[in-house]
Image (cartoon, rainbow, N blue to C red; front, side):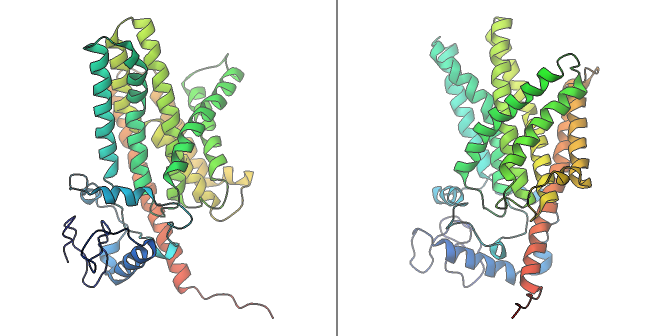
Length: 364
């Protein structure tokens, strides 16, 4: 059954398009019933052969929906998830690899806004556009990367307004915590201490947001960590951009700073904070927060790996920029995809336990 609106190929017998929510029975677009959509989707997944719903990564398919045509309703449906009435039960969550696409649209919108600000400054020489140019230039790529993590959050249990809250509050909070630590080690600042201080500041902030039981999945930790890292990266880039303009004395320095930091942003603070967030949620599971979680082998390994990457990033080795940074960025994303794969398997195992493990008899 091909949907007439989005051309998505649906299995026979469904009442709603699993992609855009079109009601086949009524023959028109209506506000989709979340319960019905989740039921249809869960039934579809259960009917699929196991080999078709493997959580093994198929990189040629992950971005297959980026260049397809998408309706406004599809985007609207993405933004309504995460509330008390639109969060699916874990039994209804698919454990296959999501196919994100909205992040690419967000990047295009940010790029258009940045070009508009650029025209205002360079063509019309109106410096009222300058703050907007710096802010949009600093936030464009970190927010785009964050949107990717949001779309990959298969449990769909974090509302978008909450993500923005974490970006703003988590970003500034982690920077302030880092400044406190930098004041303590101000006589011994080097690439290693920079990596330790900034990653400790970010992971402390991430733990503060995910310490309750609502965000207990690895994919939740990846998303919350990416939100903190996006805020940290964007605020830091805005500061460096303004400093380059004031010290360099030309817009060329400003644009160069924004360009290079934007190109490398996905593999820096966003990915690193996402990794430590996912590792902490893996360590915590369904437990209450306890400091002993910080020395669990998996979390400790990922945290030390992130600190090492950060220290290498800041090490003034010849050839480190840009080739070394690109290598570190690719390495970070290899680990990110491995953690996403593990997070999807976590959901699959959780669904299996709910479906097949016998319930404990109640005591008389």
